[in-house]
Image (cartoon, rainbow, N blue to C red; front, top):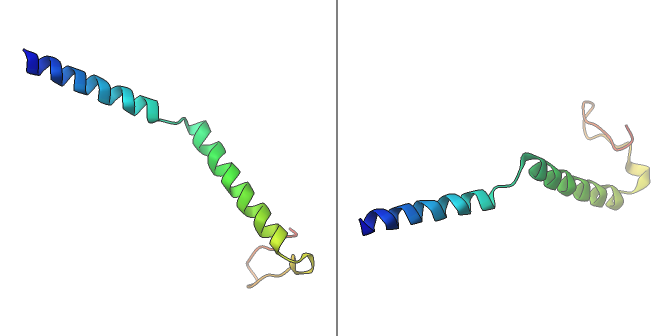
Amino acid sequence: MMLKKLGCIIVLLSVCSMYAQQITVKEAFLEKWSNSKTYLMALAESMPEDKFSFKPTEGSMDFKS
């Protein structure tokens, strides 16, 4: 009987900790969006403005368009 109670407590604590650590889809998206924005801004600020139209290949995007 004691082992059954202990097992129930362990399962309950495990489930509670799983829910406490979950982040929502919105939170995950906003975190990725913020990281992307920070990276892109640092990249754009480090690139000389006269090189914004540079394309390494014809199909590549540039910074101006």
